[in-house]
Picture 1 (tube, helix red, strand yellow):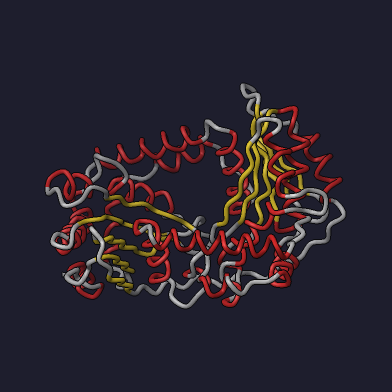
Picture 2 (cartoon, rainbow, N blue to C red; picture 1 turned 60 degrees about the horizontal axis):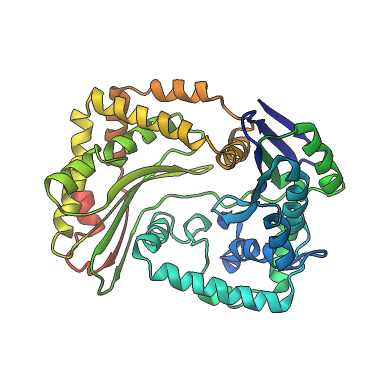
Length: 419
């Protein structure tokens, strides 16, 4: 059962009771991520996430970890482009402790200067590691190619030179502008007691004033190319088209389409490019959504000698899907999506994540039956029509990394799409 409560200052509290469980996942989702940063702040939301664990007014970094791990729990956080999440999973009797610790690190970080320097170096190492991981950094570059010179296109980690310059005042300024109760969702799932969580939340958050942050810069898909040449074993290829946002009527059609094209071993791209031609080890397609835009992404890694053939075959498969996508392929994709949805909700952490994200986007949590019905409503004709609409876009985005000198450029791929 899902229950929601909103405090007078705007804090939203949402819980889902899962009677068969003995544990609870509880966390705070803050509507402040990479796209809420000013250009000079790029990377600070992620830096702040790190600093939350480095000490509060009442707990040291070690005490934060010990408080949760002493009861066998787990605590973590992440930063995305649209939100930052802090969460813990504990047994049901330890929920008050978990909520106290999670709220403490969100509301009361001390930003000790020595800890800032330590964590700055950790993040610089993380940036370096990302640059050394081609099938990771390629997606940051693809994002930048899709949304150049705007918040949506900037990396979440931030560039090294900005991370190296952030100070205590920069962190405090971002907190003051974005970390108000009206920008937070407290979500919990598992063996929860909604009323008890609300009562504790009133004590912790009830006197806080809302911040009423300004809306982030709107996303403007433009599409461009980024090619980074390096002597790697493979060329990493990522192609993207603008997709629907969360509230677009085409959302589920786009997801079914992406699943049919590259969502598994039976998908078109996997079968044609890996199984029939042996051009790559890994290839996939996926549909991602944001508040006001979305991306259909295709990724593969291949050799320098094979990249041109792989790119051209990918375009050919995108075009072919407009004409001969079958009922069986669409039915399989729908089944994959529904099974993935249900399997992903077998843990309280996944449930809490779903609660927060749905409440942030729609102001409610659609029932699983409602979502299944929307997925089932996607027909083969819908998918073919969506495939046609997508390939007539003239603003695809392309990222290449590795020995990519011979890879077709973006304009060449666009011409092949239009032929």
